[in-house]
Length: 488
Image 1 (spheres, rainbow, N blue to C red):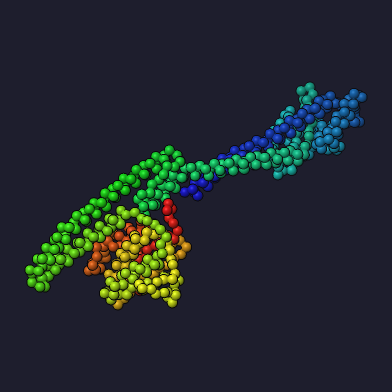
Image 2: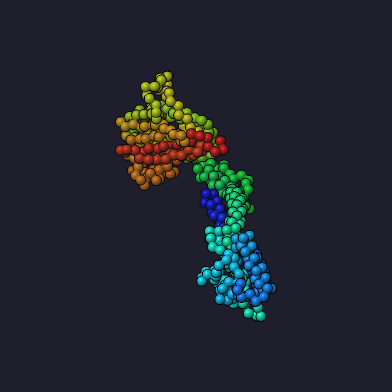
């Protein structure tokens, strides 16, 4: 969730900063240009004041020495202005002939911004809002002011300014603005990271604890954490719900355990009386034998129910365990039972060379050590249930294969039988309480063995999975982590 929420917040903040940055950049450029425009307007106004009373059309038609002096002063000022600032400037009559211009011979063009500014000034309008100049443009800035005499526009003062300095100032201002935007973006990203961490901390904790409860660790709870008030209330409600669920499950398991325990005594007495009655019946009485068989089956179901309840209620004691040695010992323990049924129990460890094994008083002892985090007692009981189930469904003359494998993350003990196996639909249900395949109802059992194995394994963070063997049979895989689970 953090990987989705954080980019969304960053994109939103970046959008807000860009939405503010572009208008600010445009406003800054307009402000810089307006300063130049005001300066040019002041310059044209000064030149217009000098040209106000010049009546001569050119140097050959000067009417008196005073007019000639004013014209000379105007030309001198325009020339100095051009030399100092590099700005073209001139005063032009209505027919576009020059009263004075710098550089000499400069004329109003027939088109373009200068031409438009000149025509606008002929109508009595001073240029005050020319088109914006941007840093990537190389055009000039044209400003025109009318010269009014006796209410009529008699001439126009125009300036055509290079915009290099203006564009440099605009670009410099934009760079400062971009630096400010980047700094604001960095602060926004830090704020977004802290905000998402603060908001999602209870959610991440809830996700982890929910997974723990889903995998059987009912004692897991969400500790006091930060976050919005709504999430803190959700955490409290979740803990209350988990307490209630755990209490209900404990009551259910206690009821099953108590009921199983209480029913065993009267059932044992009933079986004893059936045995005594059977002594008085003639040999080969089928009904008596069927009653005794059903009684013993009921006793087995009660024992398995009690074992399941105890497995679900017992806590785990995780430690680093040599799973290869554990699986070897349990395989050896079941060999006498398998031998009576005409079945072999074969044990192997991945990567182990049989010639490197040593022999001691109890049989083969593996040189290779394969470890994992598990409750040794619980895992032994789970493995017993799985091997017992495999022996039940393996035909005489076949074998049960117990194999230990490991990688960097997990250690697995697989138990594969050579029985008829299960269909895809049956694989989806295997391990459910009291479930047995309709094709295997004649096999002795209560349908709780694999459920007990799953309950025992889940106490320590392990899992149990099922698959088909080739060409036939069922493979049960008990998997535990190689590293310590969280909280251990």
